[in-house]
Length: 189
Image (cartoon, rainbow, N blue to C red; front, side):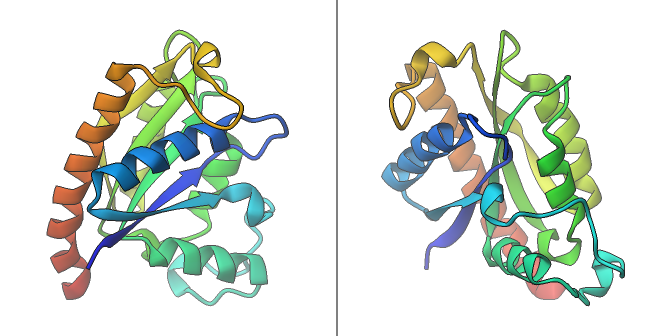
């Protein structure tokens, strides 16, 4: 049985390029096998700034948008976050979406595909890793930074370089190892 990989597009702003990058990564994941990759676009959930009256650990969600988001997150065995870098940080939409939930994230691994200017979003990826550990996600040290990505964009995807593709494959290999190992922890929790 293939494990499900949720490829989460972290930016919701108009004109974003995250969907193109997510589509490229999904193609690499399908080609490599081992996961059933699914693109999850935060923009589709219309999450306002956290508005649940009870703490996420209670899982007593009052709003339909939270229930849909919780079901999506819970369905994944592993995650890849596709994130730009805004002010050395991931976008507020992604920080908010992670903070909406608690138990649905627990004991699952995550990789990060970051993009931006010369740093390729690495500063945002580092901050995102720290947040992920607080919801018991195992963020991999392997990331896929896409520096100066704009010349690599096509109409609907990315014309990736060999190092970009190789980095994606390496991260997917690590995600598969961690996903299998953490399945036992989730079963015991």
